[in-house]
Length: 97
Image (cartoon, rainbow, N blue to C red; front, side):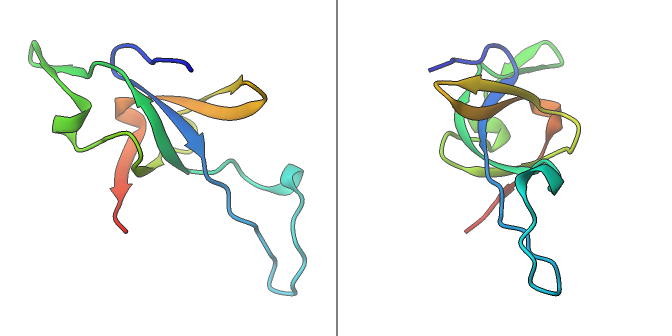
């Protein structure tokens, strides 16, 4: 598994099945990139005013589902699975269950 460094987060994208109002299921090629994902691994944290702030202090932990900016992630493939790597600034929020 990849261990992100610095203020980066490894995320497994969550894509929902998209259906039009008339009931047609859209193929993967017609869908937009997902903006939600499950945090798989986190880096050390982010420097704020010269002090390292961990992701836990920022409220982001492994296993949580997050929302992120549409154009922020870098897409990668590991063991035939799709993942995203994001910078901390691309994370918009944590979804609560």
